[in-house]
Amino acid sequence: MDNKAYSIAIDGPVAAGKGTIAPKLARRLKGLYLYTGAMYRCVALFCFKKGVDLNNEGSVESILSKINIEFKEEKILLNNEDVTEQIKKEIVAMGSSKVALYKGVRQKLVFYQKEIAQKALSEGMSVVAEGRDTATKVLPNASLKIFLTAKPETRAKRRLAQIKKRGEKEDFKKVLDDVVKRDQQDSKRKIDPLVQNPENYGYFVLDNSDLSEKETIDAIVAKIKND
Image (tube, rainbow, N blue to C red; front, side, top):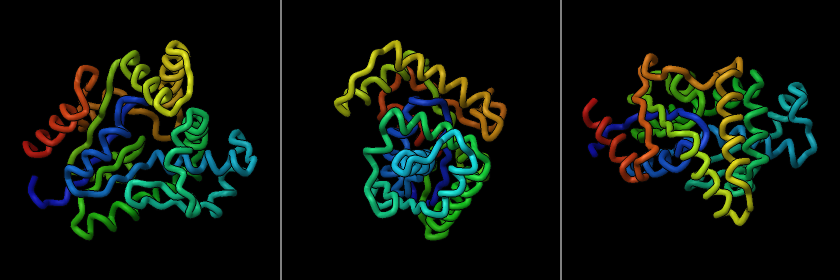
C-alpha cells in the first residue's frame, strides 16, 4: 500500500464481519479504526449500569453529558474504564440498537465521530469507520464505501461462535432469530436505517459468505488500489 490517507466507511447487517474486518483493515492501512457502534453500546451499557430506562428517550439523552468515550490502542474506554469486552455482550448489543433510534443520541455521537475522523485524516492517517451511518454522516466523502454482507445463516453461525468464545451458551435457532430480528429492526427504523439496494448509493457490495477474513480484506484492498 502507498502512504496515501484513505477514508473507508463500512456498513452492512449485523454479524456480517464488520467488527472483525474493520480493525484488521485499519492495521493493514496503518490507520485508525473508528468503531462507531461501540459508542452506542457504551451508551446502552452506561444506562444498564445506572438503571436508566432504555425505552425512555428523554432519560437516555439526559445522561449523554455524563459519558466520555475514547479509543486507545484498540481498546474502548467509557469514563476511563476499559469496557472492550463488556460491550460485546448480547444484551448490550440489543440495547444499543434501541438507543441508536434516538435522534439526540445519534446527533451527539456522530458529532464526536466526525471530530475523531477529521483529526486523524488531517494528520495524514487513514480512517476505517464501521457503523450504520458512517458512509452518509460520518464520512460522506469517503474514499470507499463498503457494504459488507453475508447470508443470515452464515452470520448467525459467526455470532454463535463469538458467543461461545466468550464462554456463554446460546441456541443456534435463537441466534438466527435475533439476527433476522435485528435486520428487520435496523431496516425499518426511521433514523439512519440499514441501506436497501446499497449498490444504488455508490457502495462496493461485498458478500463474504464464502470468504475468509484474509480474502475479504484482500478484496477490499484490491478495490482501493483499483479505484
